[in-house]
Image (cartoon, rainbow, N blue to C red):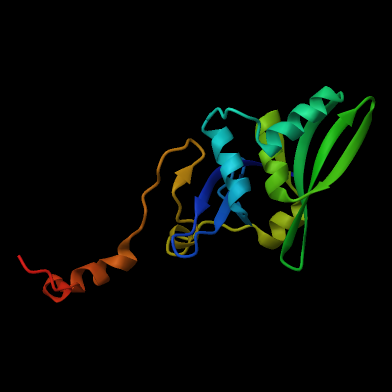
Length: 175
């Protein structure tokens, strides 16, 4: 298993879809996984330290496991089949290890709440991991938030030509 950190949670400027970017520790190799908006928000809120008035679903899960005496040990993105990622939440319950099937986004959202390691299987990282490419990576990974909650630079270059070509006289506004 390869330990990773959450490099960022990003949003596609074109489609509004979210992607969590997992980066291999001590390496530049990364694994982008497309996730749903609610899961992206749950991960980002926790990474930013935002407190919510009522528990979100992943907070509820973490509290329930704790109340029942189970401890989250780590989570792992364990498989990739037909372009679908699979994950497991690994718990210690009593004196036994319990593995629970999960979507990666839910496992990661729980991992940030339980403050546990996130791993990716060697096979998944070999099959889907990527190295940054100076020309392609910025376009693929363009987003709005980093793990520290800071706004990243939005590449609005695709709109530059459009803005420059606007003819404000065509708007029909008379003074």
